[in-house]
Each structure stands twice: as structure tokens, then as C-alpha cells.
Picture (cartoon, helix red, strand yellow):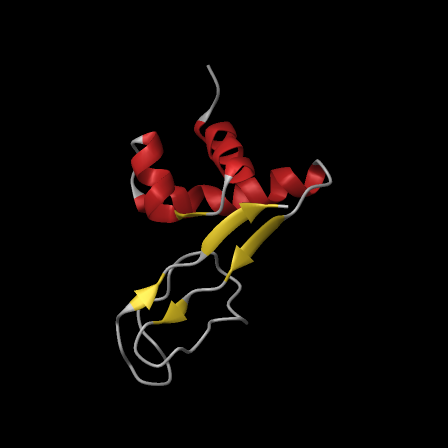
Amino acid sequence: MSTIREQIISLLGEEECDARFISQSLGISEKAVYDHMPHIIQTLSAQGKKLKINPASCVSCGFEFKDRRRPSKPSRCPRCKSERIDPPKFRLK
């Protein structure tokens, strides 16, 4: 039996996923997925692999959160203040 983090890594190796897809696939909360991400990034780095993060973007104005360091979904857009945000997507590289 593999750990949650190993299961997340295997999902990311198969396809590009957002936190909601991962949480539904593994039966855990989205918050738990975001809590695991820094540890997964560190594990992959030690293995010589990288996690590619396609940044979150605003649905209303198209603003991309390119400079955001945290892998979690932002709460609102700094440009138009909209709360309709597409979450970041993750992929194993």
C-alpha cells in the first residue's frame, strides 16, 4: 500500500491535474492536497524530477498568477477583484 503522497505523485505522472481532480481521485480534501504539495516538490527535487505548475488564472479578466510561490489557489484576482479563479494545474516533468 502506498502513501497519499506516492499516490499523488503517480497521478501527476499520468496526466496534468488540479487539486480538485486529485482530491476526488484519492478521496481526500483539496486542502490536504495543497498541504502535501510542498513535501511532494521537495521529494521530487531529491529524486532529480520537477513538478511543473501551470499558474492559476482569473476567469473574468485573464490575469495569470505567474509569480505566486505557493501552490494553492488564490482567493481573488488582484486586478479585477473577482473570486472566479481557475486553480493551478500540476504535472510531473
